[in-house]
Image 1 (cartoon, one colour):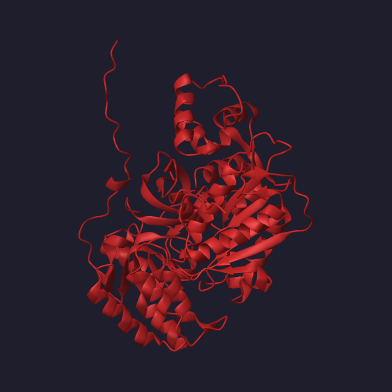
Image 2 (tube, one colour):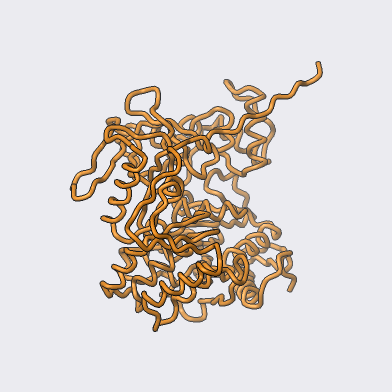
Length: 506
C-alpha cells in the first residue's frame, strides 16, 4: 500500500493497515482514495494503545490526512454545512478542551466530545456567512457588517478553520450568531478519540450511538477517570481490536523525560530508586532539573502539578503571598482556572457567548484587570483564537484549613474561577506545557500510602502523567519550599502585538 507522505515506523504502519482495513469494510478506501456506500451492519471499535512518545498522534494525523484525501469531510463541531447524500464524515475528538488544543497546536483539527454531541444552532443570516466561508455559497450581504468585517472573517478562516473565530474577528459575539445548542440527531461515520484513557463509560456509549466506526487512541499507563475504579473503556474491547505501539518516536530518541516515564514500567522500581534516576538524569541533561524549591515565576503561566488538594491550596497561598497579592483583590497576571458558568437558564445567551469565547470548565485564563462594570474581569483565555474576554466573574480563593473559599470579589452570576498556580495531576491530564514542575513530596506521600490502581502503584501512574506533561523541561521539586519571585507579575507577554502601519499610494 502507499503510505502518507510521512514515513511510518513498522508498528505504526501495521496499525495504519489495520485501521485502513476496517475503514474499507465500511466503504472508505484510503488506499485508493475512494468512497463507497456503507453496506456494513453493526458498530466497530478499535483501540490504538501506546505509552508517551510511541507515535499515537503521528499515526492519528496520518490517518486523518488519508481520509481527507479520500474525500471524507472533517467535522469540527463549530459549524456543519448543508448535508450531501453521498457525504462521509470524520470527527477527531478529545475529552477536554485542553486535550483538543494540544492536538490543534500540532496541526490536527480536533474538537471536544461535547461539541460533537451538542451542535450549535446558527442565526439564519449568519449561517450565510458560515456557508460562504466553507466554500458552499456566494459572498453574502449582511446588515450591520461592512465589507472590511467580512474580509477579516475570511482572512481568519483561511488561517484557522473556525467559523466562530472568524465571526468573532468580524466583531460579533457568540450570542449574536449562535441561538442555542441541540443534541446531535444524525450519526456521523468515523470518530477518532485521543486521550481515550480519560473516557468514562457514559461518554463511550454516547459516542457509539453516533459513530458506527470508532478508533480510540490511548495510553494505558495514565490515570483512569475517578468514577471508573481504575478501569479504562478500551479494556472492554476484545483482544483482536486492540493495536499496540511500542517504539518511541516523539522528539529525540534519547529524550531523558521519556526515558524516566518509561522506567516507571519496572514493577521492581521503588520511589527512592526512581528519584535517584531523576537525579542522575539531571546531572547529564539540562532538560531534567532537580529542583530544591518551587519556582514562583514559572507558576504564573505553568501550574505546579500535585497529588493532594491540600498541597495545591498551600502552594497557591504561598504563591500569592510571594507576589504580595492582597486578600481583597487579584493582581494582573494571576492565573485562574474556569470552574464553570453559574448562570440561570434565562441567561442562556450569556452562557453561549462565554462558551463560544472559550470560557468552559477547565479553561486556563490569566487575570488582566478589572472590567468596566463592578464584578467584571478582563481575562486572557490561554490557547483561544480570540483570547481577550470581559466577563462577570466569581473568583474563589481557597485557603488552608478553611472549608469555604475566600471570594475577593464577585458578580451575582457569571463565570466561576479557582486559582490556577497549582493543579492536581488528575486535572492536568491531557494538557502540556513547555516547562513543568512536579511536586515530588506529594508523590512520595502517595508511595507511602501504598495505593494501587489497576495493578499499578498509584504513585507511578501519577508520576507518569505528571512527567509526560512536560514538552521541553521537567523540574522535579524535592523540597517543600517556594523561591522568591525575580520580578513582579506582568501581563506584557499577553498583550497583542502592535500591527505595523503602512502607507498605501493614493
